[in-house]
Length: 87
Image (tube, rainbow, N blue to C red):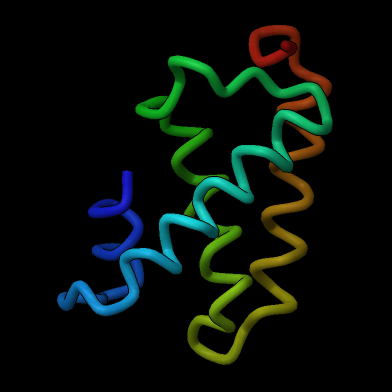
């Protein structure tokens, strides 16, 4: 998933890989915290989009951290209410 996130943020080097990986794991834990099942769903488009939005929020991508935070929170909350994603 790290390569997908780097591509979405137009990062072509490996210098931030450890930090990006930590943010990916933090996002997955946050999703789990609200009841979203993430085990085995690392390739699910909505889980990947959640991680992308979370990382863009954390890195203030394009100076729009507020926008990405709202988008992440809305998607996270929607997934937590969806039966297909309940843990």
